[in-house]
Image (cartoon, rainbow, N blue to C red; front, top):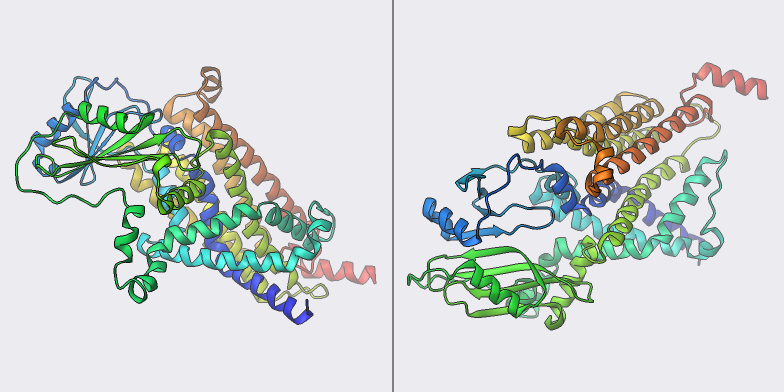
Length: 519
């Protein structure tokens, strides 16, 4: 390859990576945590003070419809599961259940920790209407960066794959770590770049074909692959709902082995009432989602979707979703995705550090302003995200119980913005040390906050076999130790490392004196 062509690919890889890196760090860090979405929901929700009264789903439906007739248009029934033991009915963002005495009660979700971190994953903290599509565009750029990176480093693939040269050459050390993680996890990153772009921008990507080739009928053709069923239209004829137990029996007969999680009702009390059932089904396929659509008044089967009868389009889309969210393979796949997600976040962090090292003037105490600004921006955004996520965990256990969702969201943004401001107000090395110590302190406090807020001792949870509490505690301790070690490394480099760097804390006079002695 010509040197000019190689330089072009290096420039593309570098600048596309820098442009996309900040958003992708947040998406990967939050996404790694989100892999354990259901487990986090169990962690964030305190155990009920009193057991919920045993009730049939139909009893809850009848009670809510009698008290709130407007709910008949659209409502959702969430069935008890491993991490959500309560029977809950939702409509119009309102939640209902039976209390311990069997009385209908409306309640607010205790927390939105898992939901907020998931939203952070696909919006990078931006407003949802903007963040989703921006992340889709960023993932397209991410794919360009991956392709150009492979072209640039393919010639030295086997030579430097397992090289990690730790020493005084900081740039080489970061380059080795960046390349090794990037190449070893390349299939994972290719899948994420591709699936993220499709899931975020799928409808937009179809637009040219919709109007230029299929004369506006493409969405009708692919609709059955995207949606389980078209929403039913009311007939205007009154008809009672069949008991939920009878509908569930039909659903389980049509999709043997399905673990129904949610029932979605439309137009209850109408002859065209519809119920859509969703759940997981154990099959030897990547996609394990099943759905059954019934007429909720007559029990007539409208559609059955299980992996064995998926159309090619449905199989592609559902398998892509399962690959993206790690929804297969149980705990082993979850932990693998978690590790790869965190490694991906490091990939973007280290890419920015490499850019800074590449532009360092090794014979001048005054470094380029661009390098200092990039260092400050990287520290503020990346470590602000880390500290903000840890703060959300703390607020979940220590914040006011009646307003936790609001406190969790505001707490994240407050910590994130303060970290960004702090990074630009302090020298990069000093800010790096202080922000990493903040991340270590906040993360270390998570098990203690859980103990204080819930009364559950993590050590006793280990004896009781509560894997969720123990897992969060162990990961928090491990990451707190890692952040502290990184903080000490930043401080040591600042005090004793090369003074010709934005990461130096040594006074110019001291550095100049050492240079004269060396000469």
